Image (cartoon, rainbow, N blue to C red):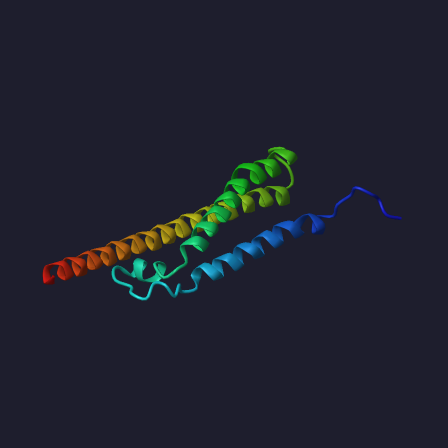
Length: 145
């Protein structure tokens, strides 16, 4: 006999597992070097993160930022308040786990945002250097003629 409308805990966790798998895939893609950035000048942070794809870094920052806010401000209080302040220790551990994973995702979001800004800044500097070189070439051509 099947009861309609009852969702098991395993079925409720499948969307979260799929979301975390998607975050892991985006994080892996964001960590791959970008072929457009062959020169890495600067600090070790710049050398590591400036080779990342800015689009995937911003996507990772947004995905982990939303996940962290949901974990910290929705799931953790929801689990804590659903059982009361003196509920079972297991329910309080789930609430604490939600806060800890929320903080982890928040830190991941900050690091991904830093990688995005480093890659974006490096691209801006490269574009400025290239435009300055083109300007100098044009000036030299006009001076010759």
